[in-house]
Image (tube, helix red, strand yellow):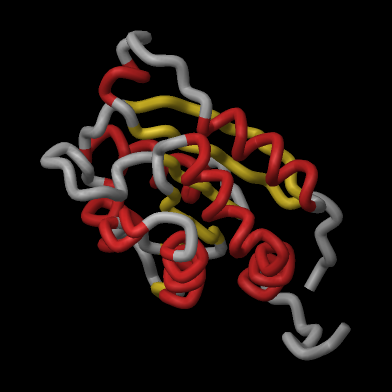
Length: 169
């Protein structure tokens, strides 16, 4: 395996109002700042789409299959509103689910707000891309990413065929 020095990342914001220019996206830029500060991640793709399963699916498939991103962070669409479609759209695209990532985010969030019980985000792998659904609010996205960010470099390394043991320091 060739060791990568930079992992390519995409950030996809799912918001009806944001996609229409009626609301400024603050969670996407927050995630960009966080992930690039955390290590060898470089955001190469960023987009805002409506809470529309076909638009979400098309973007995810393009970023995995064509752009060959290593990590995709989605923000928005993880709650219980009728338009929230992130988990339903993401899950069928995954080759492997990684429930521990989503469980860790919810466990950290419940310590801050009882509303975390409503989060339905999923995480997993499609081909060699890690996809993680995060909440749509800037605070929720930031806090959820904080809960798992230290493990993402190793996760992406392993997904890409890295051979170093998970317990190795």
